[in-house]
Structure formats: C-alpha cells, structure tokens
Length: 139
Image (cartoon, rainbow, N blue to C red; front, side, top):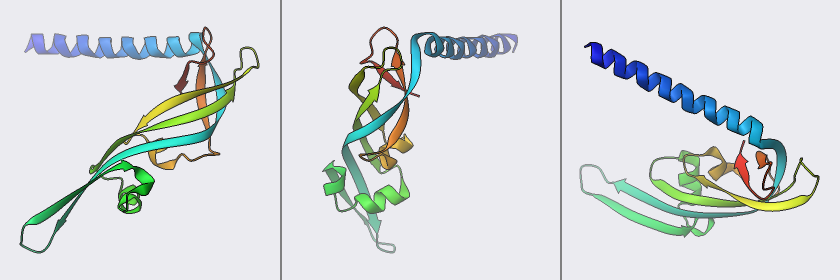
C-alpha cells in the first residue's frame, strides 16, 4: 500500500516537472506571433457504419481528400471517432525576432479542433523559435 502511494507521488512530481520544463522551454525559446493560413491539405479516413433494425450492419470506408468525400459534411458535423486523418496547414507569418516574412507548416490530427475549423484566410496563434525562424509550434 505504501509503495503505491510513493509511486503515485513520484508520477505526480514527474508530470509536474515535464509541464514546468515545457512552459519554460516555450517562454525562453519561442516568441508568440500571428500566422495567416494560406493552404489546408486534409487527408481523411472515414468509417461509416449503418444498421437497419435488427439486421446486420454495413460498413463503408472513405479515404482521401476530405472535401472530395461525400460523407465529409456529415462526419465533420458529428466529429465522431469514425474519422481519422491529418491536416497539413501552410501558414505565413512575420517573425517577431527580426520582422522577416516566413512560411512554414503545422500538422493537426482529428483530435484538434483546428483540423475541422481552419481554412485559407484563417488567423492562428503560433510560437516562433528564437534560433530558427522557420521552426514554429502551435500556441
């Protein structure tokens, strides 16, 4: 019983340490900036299962560019677990460190709200690396 308590305390301290390290890393090595989205490339795998009463269910799988999939609008509205995929978002921004113009990309998964909501012209908050102005992170 006592070892379980020690284990939980050690886990808590470890997780707090990781969170503190991440916060310190973000504040010392990155500067906040606004970025403008100019291209969103979404790739989706949508699994749609339909049931008809007590009978067997049928499953259809769609994959490819999300907008070209006929089930995208329905799946997007539900944001259910039947969607998997990745969105590569190209952004342009001005680096706050030196005022120069840059472009870069971010990746979002279906667990991120940005996967569903971002489109060309959207503005998002990013963090720009102090050492490499082409290296960015989600804010």
